[in-house]
Image: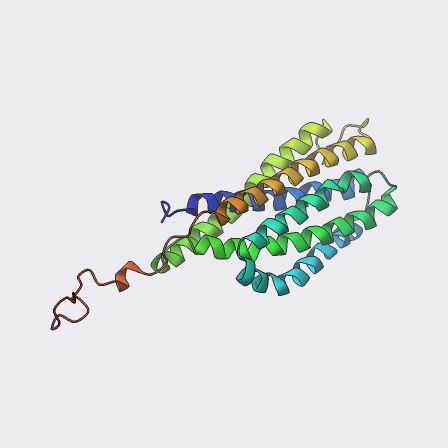
Length: 233
């Protein structure tokens, strides 16, 4: 299964995609609460448009995937990248305005993420035989969780390094500008990750899927289906 054409590439795409998602949730929370001082409820409400965008796009993503295949994921990842690239424009405004602008960015990100997920999962499972669908799903779920953990670790480290202090217990001279700089740097990095997902999905589009017919359903001998009949010419 791991040697199936395109399966390792699809697993890499899953890891990169979910790493970026988890990293975004982490650094956005730090910026909203520690950077611009929003209370937990107000910070949490900024994430609501992301869920709304995800729900709205999910309703159409399966139909789009059935028609356009993994190309839908390419478009979705590009939408995520475009939204994250706009973050520095939003963080240049006062905190009250930032809250609404970042909520709009999250809505765009949710739309893009929904367009990525369904076609990507379908492409992953198309890389394995039907007999291995359970194992393929298990590998997919495992690497999804691993990717999220990796994203929190890697993006969190980048954010901490750019900030120059622990965001949970910042030094007294840490300013809002410092938080904004760290957030802008990490979100631009996340935009590059989203573009990487789009490039990987584009590569998957040109990688033919393995035949998914179960090998156990194929007769091993021309006359195995009915031993009374001789092989046909």
